[in-house]
Length: 88
Image 1 (cartoon, rainbow, N blue to C red):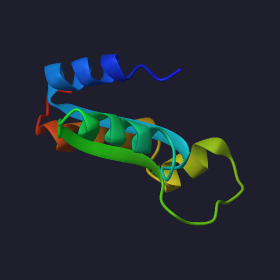
Image 2 (image 1 turned 45 degrees about the vertical axis):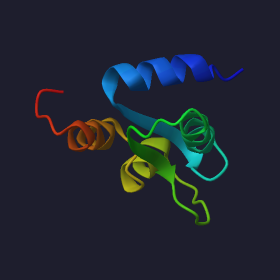
Image 3 (image 1 turned 180 degrees about the vertical axis):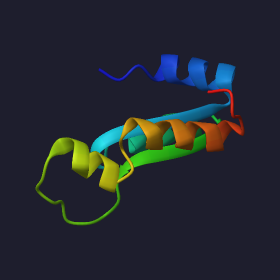
């Protein structure tokens, strides 16, 4: 189950939200998170990390994550960019 109340509470506290999916961002966690926040009138800084609308590829997980910006360094960089901080 998706805990919309917790999402709203957390984004209110932080002012930001990053979702991370190992598949397309269309119709996934990013979609339900955005829908939930907009339904209650919230618009935090938001970044959806995942595959854009494209065909997938086969390969080693670590290589694919790096290629599509889903590895740890890319997630940290996205978070820093979103909150404007070098302290993360």
